[in-house]
Image 1 (cartoon, rainbow, N blue to C red):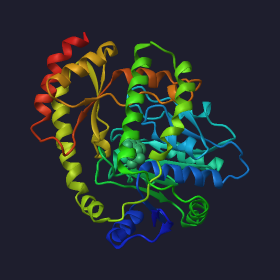
Image 2: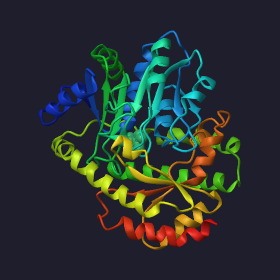
Image 3: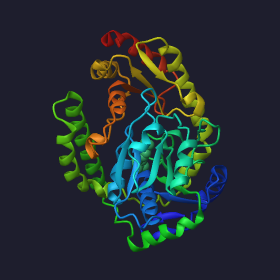
Length: 385
Ligand SMILES: *Cc1c(COP(=O)(O)O)cnc(C)c1O
């Protein structure tokens, strides 16, 4: 199906064969193409809440290292996000920490495969089955990869969401939501019939709003990182202005699927190029004052090549020095509970966020890029002493 301004519509011809092959591969019965992963998350949160109508203030469990979209869309859907601490060496949600956040209001758990690393989902699958709640996989950063047990990503969840927007593994625009059971389409259709997608704002307004969000988020994270202000002070302010950004999240599927179909057919080759670049970083960076996240070797997907600095104090100066040599560096992500719910303390996520450095493996760089980039990191490693 396609999520359109007028509700759910049949899948367009260009995407039909991908849809059925993909659903078959992950053992799911329905697929809904959207404009953003955010829209898919919103839809599946609404679905999870509607499947448990007796719960009046539903909650969803999300990891404390992720982009804030999964929390923003939860609030938009009327669901409270609860944050679970992460494994200090991968940044993936630590299943052992889930019981601290699980309540009788929990309607879903979102497992996010981070930077291309995939999470083992057996224990979460069992937990969700026991409690009759949904397991949602976000595999945007591990598209085309495998879980630790060798099955494809997306095959363990009751639902999966993926983004094909800028900076993602396929970046031609759009998103997708899959549902294990076709019977869940009906309640979802009812939701979007009663409340159709709002009109998409004009492109200039969207661009300005999304830039504003990015600036605000960077500005506030910098204050938190520096310790100039406490999360307890930021969160009420953030939650007050947050609704101004609601027009960003709900977007209909692209009308033309040809770019997506073409990109999807090239996925294996694209993943291979990403692995080649990641391998070059891994070889060059071995033995430095950092811990290398090499989980992409098991999943088969590298989204960004990621390392954790041994000495977090100089993360900012180090990243700037490498940027100064002309290389891309990011430090994704600042823990979202600081903005949404500081009382869900997650000390491992706080420590992880101060150590993380992400390097590019995208199509935007050449195969010759990783070696000089790694040389720049090694040159500036003395900043980390
Ligand atoms: C980028 C991203 C999203 C949001 O995707 P959009 O299509 O921009 O809504 C969601 N989840 C993860 C893991 C992402 O990296």
